[in-house]
Length: 264
Image 1 (tube, rainbow, N blue to C red):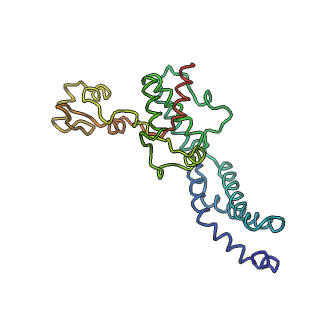
Image 2: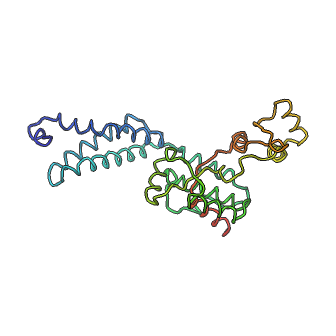
C-alpha cells in the first residue's frame, strides 16, 4: 500500500513507516549525540533523511520485509557520520581511558596504542577494552596471578555473579550476545568488602592513632563498622573518597592487560 501511495504522489504512508521507527531513532540518536557531543537535532534530521532515502531507493528489487532493517541501518550510519563530522576533541570514553592510565604506576610503559593497534579510542567498545586492559596491567603488579585467575574462573563458571544485565552498555550487550554469557564485573568485586582501619588510614595518609580518634569523633572520611572487635572500612566507600571509579571490566581484557604488562 505504501508503494502504491508513492506512485500516486501520496507520501503519507512513507511518513507512517518512519513513525514506526521513531522509538528506535529517538533512543539511538540520544546515545550517539551524548557519546560524540553532537547536536541532537542534527543527528535526528540525518537519520530521518537517510531512512526516507532508503525507502525511496528500495522501491524495486527489495523484499518489503527487508526494507525496515535497511532503513534502520542507513539511519544509524548517517547518524555516526554526522556525529563524527562535528566531533569534539574528547569524549566520555576518552576521559575514562585517560583516568585509567592516570591510575597506573608512573614507571609503567603501558598505553592504549601499545595494546590496541589501528583502533579508534572514541569507539565505546574500544574504550571499554582499553579500560579493562589498563586495569589488568595495574593488577599484575599488586595481585598474585593465581588469585586473579581463580576469581575469573569463578566468574566464567557462574560460581560468582557478575553485573546485572540491565547495567550493561550497548557494546557490552553485543559482546554478551556473541559469547552467550555475561562475564562483566565491577573492579571492586575482586577486593574484600572491608579493609581494616589501619590499612584505610595508611591509604588515606592518616596516622593510625589519628584515624581511631576520628572514628570516635565521627570525623573519619569513610563509613566504618565494628566487626570482630576491630574497626572496618567499606572498600567501595574508600574508593569513592579517593576518586577511584568502580569501573566495569571483562576478564578477557583484564587478563590481556596483565599479560601485556608482564611482557614489558
